[in-house]
Length: 288
Image 1: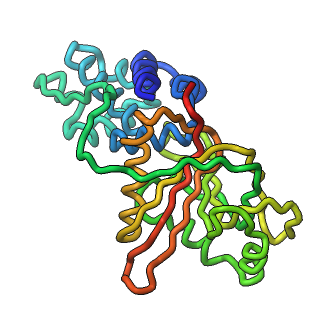
Image 2: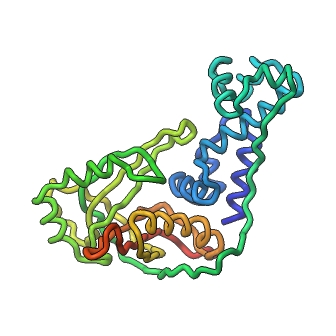
Image 3: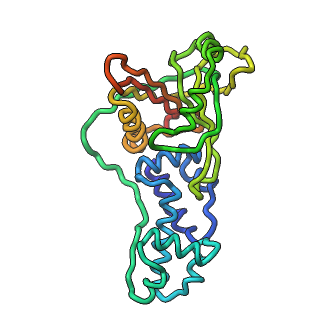
């Protein structure tokens, strides 16, 4: 995985002044765009779009120091106007492009590279589960992509579920995990503008095919999932587990993420405030 991540960094570096292809990034990474964005975010602390923007502006700073005109530099790095470039550069660096040229001041953001760092010694519990083909059945909607904090659109989706939908989901549920799950899939491709949506489903897993039109059905092929249980304050324990899956476990696990739904469930503790048991199910395959 580390090799693939560094190949993506090289590809981005070679295309800072041209078009950066989502298809090429996904090809180099060997995973879907959505999974790569999650891996990158949890490893670097940046969204991929933030990283690319920072690298472009850092290189633009170097060009300005070497005497290139602001207009030329703006268009070189894909800005549609000098004003747009100036605003972005000022927000990023704290000073105007003209100040770089006149005073020789600068700011830099170096290229990232990824290495394995052994730290902590805290064991990460997981199990590998092979599953037959099944259906995700529930209610779904397109929601903005968000890797941190509470996604209010998902909250609204949960609040919209009717009693009839709940009863049908519980009747259909017949495969592990026997819980109401949150699943995400079908991310779109506007990540370079820090935009983008994915489909979020709240529902159950079932091998049944007879489902009413009250519920959405997503067929999922047979496959393997790595399952990560966690327990603690909610939602911080769940979010920390997600971060560790992508930043610590995956790069050295011998597994790679595949393009299938990731899902999770949470069971709140009735006796402890804001405390829960959760499981994160990540679709994987063994690296040959």
